[in-house]
Image (cartoon, rainbow, N blue to C red; front, side, top):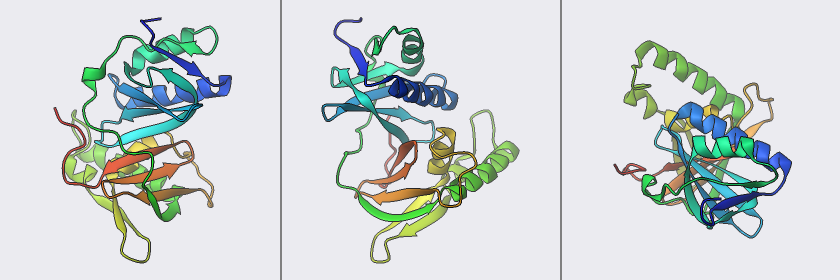
Length: 215
């Protein structure tokens, strides 16, 4: 192990979940950097920058040492595949590669649920537009910033979901590609964040006008 940096994964199924998350993060960004933070005594949350200026996260049984670490997704996935047992070396620290604060675990309130099929349909439509009007740099910013869903709690809380979040939910595989009619994603509100909770993970988008990361 590199110093005392290690990840103890809670079960073989959790190992598979971590591997899937890393694989999908690397599909969105082949130089992806991930951050792992402990959540309680028996779980950790893995965070990834998606390339859409939103964060992807999944909570997995296990424990990280130290309690907050940053690693290269490709290196971690390589070590995960070669690990014997449930302890994995995350590699050298890349703390300087992660800029920007993480969302809080608490303080979110439920706004509304929307069909997962709507997310998939919008992602497919957006991909078609991106193929037609995008460039080597990816989809046009005007498409990414387009507000495609607005949810409200029926009172005074409203959240707008842009194509950035839609692409991230679909790209990370957080909902099935052919969801059932009753499959839903849950939209939650925080003064600084909008969170979309899907079956296999969550997406966090800044509500403020400031960018999620500085360069």
